Length: 292
Image (cartoon, rainbow, N blue to C red; front, side, top):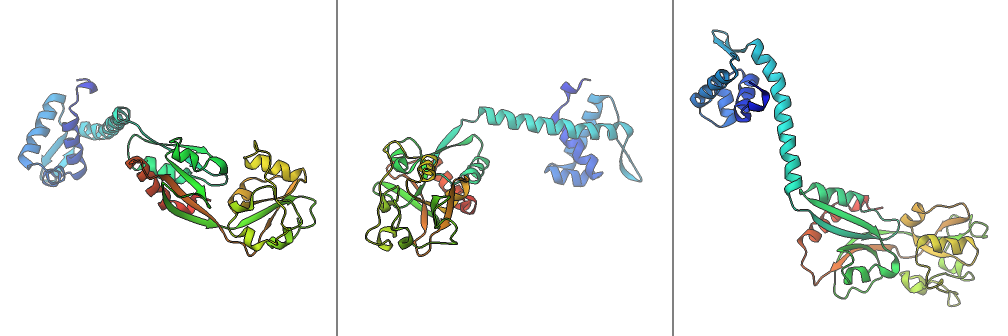
């Protein structure tokens, strides 16, 4: 009899008896009546043409054929289980959530938790810039964004995620570059290369003569901002996770004292009912400590 003719149900019955060496306990484990199990094992022995158990005063024992079959049966049953799982994954419809993240933030742990919680789930993660973080949610480009405040919350679902300090990024040869920390007023004579309105509290804390100028309209990425700083055009203020991620020798990172923290918020289109997105949001909240 070839292995392809084996009845997997009877094979599972055999393994239960072989591991318990007691028909009564095996029947309880399988949730079937003991007489039914005994008949199934006898029928299995007849099909195989081999005695698998001896039954005597010493109780139920495996024969050499039974010992060999037990070894092989576990492999076969594991392979059958793996096959069913592979087929289930292929047959199950794939549900995808698209996730936007601001530079320095990580959605890796949340994506893994989301995908592990249900078959056919997939999280597609892409980086978004400050200028597009809200618009990509409103226009359906992504389902959810790890956004940085301040943002226009109108029409958005939101869930606060975390807060982190802000750092000044200065040219490497700036006199303030070796300071342990600076205050907003210390930076007043330097050109801020983006609108201070995007920095909570900065405008209120900086001295009135603080100079600022947004970079060229095509410059939105962190890499481009650092290029402007390295070229000694001015300085930028970035969240701690971003400055930790983007390191280069021609700029210096200096913590800013007395400045409100940068707030990270999950945002999504409140007008769109999306249970898959909601499941990802739940996973992201569970994994908030792994975001930075």
